[in-house]
Length: 197
Image (cartoon, rainbow, N blue to C red; front, top):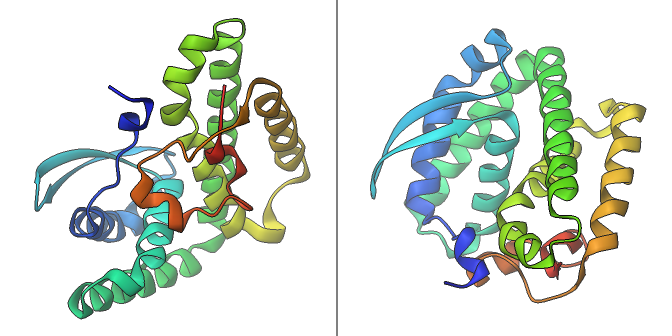
């Protein structure tokens, strides 16, 4: 089993089904104010239990928009409608949504720090777990892009520190996830997906 098998590309149909469920739930999710919510989603490949968060929703939107040109017209239309609904809901509850995203970003930074603490001095384990754990860093990127100027200076500083820690244990490598995702995540922006311990 290769390390890339940790993070496989979902089919657009599955991503659209999950995004639809998350968008349906988004207003209640934001109002409830809990960072994570478990959803049961019926997808073309069967029912899945999905851990919804603002960062996950933003990542699915990013991925689907990145695949836009390869999608059939019907799926493009579905994605466009879902994105518009998500943006409308997030905008109407912007302050609450951004507060929730800042809390999520903090938990994901903490999770990365725990991972880095755990694997220091154990390169084999670090290599095996890295593709899965680095998903937190990518979701942080999606959150930071949404927050823009609302991103707190304290979180910016924490992110800088965790990035420095990541850089200390990695070296350049091929894309660490399913190769089908590589065009959506260019090296210049997503440098941490092109490294390995």
